[in-house]
Image 1 (tube, one colour):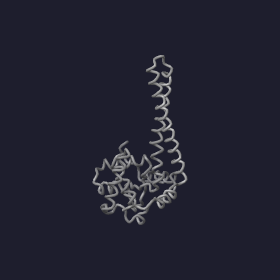
Image 2: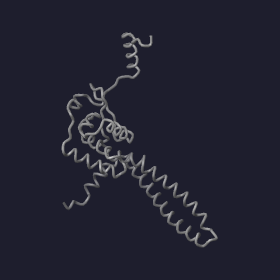
Image 3: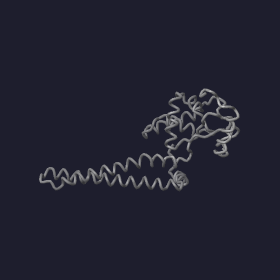
Image 4: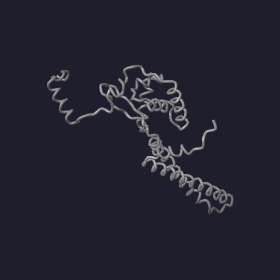
Length: 223
């Protein structure tokens, strides 16, 4: 009958075969290494709350959802991976909002799911290489937008170019003005594309030492 449970022996044999195919599995974190992760209610320090709010506002200004920045900041400052429930409690968000935000962050590659030994629920850790994280966003969003802008400018330039030979002086003058100004926009977009490509190429060889060097050489604050 379809409703009958399979015999325990058969289940054990199938599980053993499945485990053998998967091979040995090593947890990303052990319970001892993470200080009994998820055993206590997770609360934020004032410093963590302040940083998460600031990062949330910055991320929102950059065109992302504020909670994406808040959750990433909490994970970034945490010495151990956190569960969705930890994040829900810490930031006082709904379970649905946390789940949706974690999925978005994972899609951008700035948060990854990790396995904690002895725990059945999922845990998450942040990408801590800031330069690498920024380069992913530039690669998937800014570069794409710039390429689309270049294509649109080129099409507009081709269209207005046809009107430069118009018999009507006003049309010809208007076409000449637009041709020159669209060409300037196109050159600016191409420059932006080269800058982004240079940034992405630099990120591949890890530009963080260079960033730290530049920060050390920055003029002292007046505060």
